Length: 247
Ligand code: SF4
Image (cartoon, rainbow, N blue to C red; front, side, top):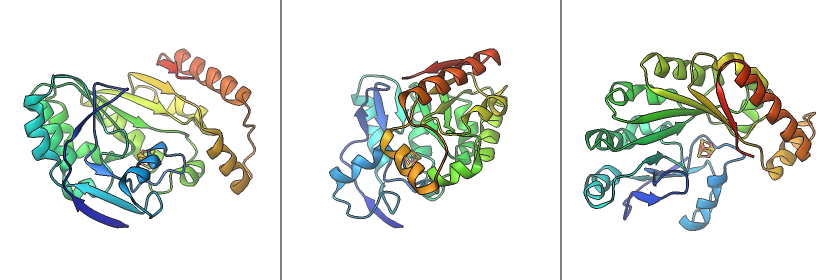
């Protein structure tokens, strides 16, 4: 893993998901094979494969402390093109520093992660005026998880973290994106731990890759995702969890 400390020029960028996105890192140790953030490689001049490098924006907190006074108050998505709680965050605490500023200024924010390291900041999150924490969980099958998300924490740890956040009265959600084989097992796992669930499909390129490499027996036509996605949505609704299909 090549870790480089860099100084960024700004930290709040425009986002289509929320008003702003905040990425304290470029690159991600979780190394998911379907990661759409890989496009960042093009903009940062990295020759290494995705998952093999992380640039650490060591001035992230300093930048936010300045920008928060200058920019119009809005909702912040943490993070978008990296996992804000990837292992390096344990050392650098940049996400924590940024969340402290957002809480202090009463800015709304949404954290989306795969890492139980977010629990380190639970005390801080309970003080936020408006925040939501989501876990991306794509399957209930740990073997499938290890193929698609080799560097990310196990499913059980993510579910436990959601339970702890929910118990602390923090708004929680699960992002089943991309929906992978074994996702149907998530209905039982997530009961009583999330306020709502979102489901999205897998890009064909990665579906093909997994199919060829691991001989997985699942069809990859639109019909597969439409049918499975609808079945999953209906199961969540039946379990009393509001669920939205994004495709
Ligand atoms: S955790 Fe998110 S940002 Fe990191 S590699 Fe996986 S999909 Fe990409």
